[in-house]
Image (cartoon, rainbow, N blue to C red; front, side, top):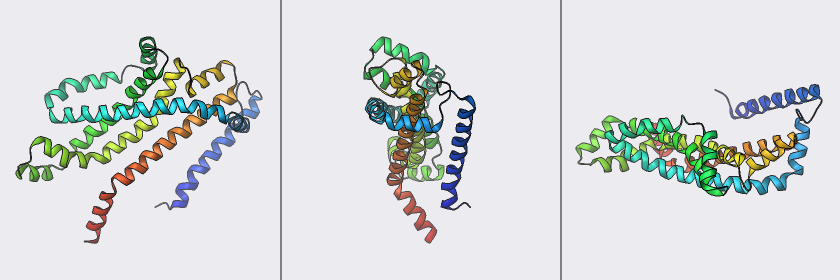
Length: 257
């Protein structure tokens, strides 16, 4: 098994190799308007940090609003689908079909219908985020232990009680798995919406820097997007660690016994 040091050093080594290859490629190209080197990008990131943070406020607001709505919508939809097989047979194909429509097609329609404000970007984030949560939750609810379910059913629990008191807690690890993916996608969804039309945000800054061939700033924006996505992923991991502390305690007790 790998120790903690190896788990930290291995990704860092990989990152250093990528940065070194990037710097060599930039040196060989010799034109920053085609491929700026990492040093130039870091310099641009530091110089434009106030602007990056100012635009980040728009993007994070859209991402967090959209993610929160997606969680509520996905939880309600999953509950309905798990409690009614007929409803699941009717709606599940439509849920799958919704993911076959390219986001790059829906985003301009939302902008045409709802303008350049907050709403169209939030809708794009919701469309991107709700699917992984729904799929993960359905898998978690389907994976409930049949023997445990039969035991509680023999004690007189109805379908709703089984869902809320047994199946839902057992499916929480699956829920957080989907939420981690959705949190990472949320920033991307917000940026796609801004990229096609916005009053502010990292997507707008990305478009402006690309159109002016300021590729150092373009890469700096990409790094900022990666940083926010990573922070949201880490926040969900921390929330999962706190929310599922009871599972670690149960596992420890079982191990000690």
